[in-house]
Length: 180
Image 1 (tube, helix red, strand yellow):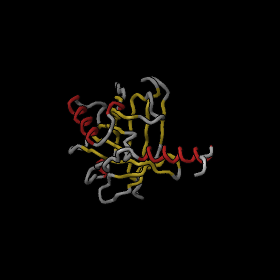
Image 2 (image 1 turned 120 degrees about the vertical axis):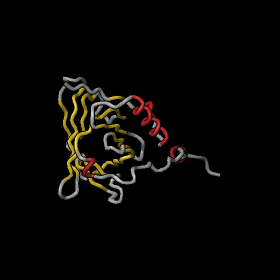
Image 3 (image 1 turned 90 degrees about the vertical axis):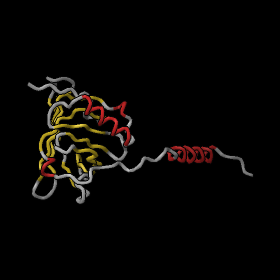
Image 4 (image 1 turned 180 degrees about the vertical axis):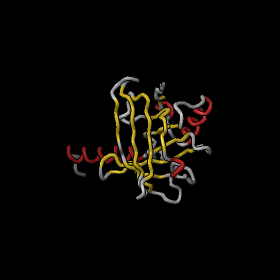
């Protein structure tokens, strides 16, 4: 038997760590809404809470707006104040692409060409007043509403739903909303 060399040891260690990393329990597919009426979904949504991306950390008065274009894409405008209610205004304009036309609940959101980020409508209230957007990886989530707030029992019900979908709800942060 040959002695293990430094290079062989490093390769074996890297392979082992790769296998251990793959041993995480696999989550069930993220459940989405069965059918989303895109025209009813368009308009302004106040971000009530989120697991924020690095761009959104410290967001105040965050609003996501959607407009359905004639070519079927979704013009999106995301605005917020950075760090405070009177902080600098930030504005992003990604483009949404409906990837599942049967449900309209699975989109690709393009911030930078050609990458389309996973974007899934996992909840939409019957009156289209509250929605939850998630990602298959469960790394980010957005709870949004047509008004700048929702009742606490409804908010906690959404947290329970997200926990049931495999989200670590301890990472979800409320987004400060204060409007005249």
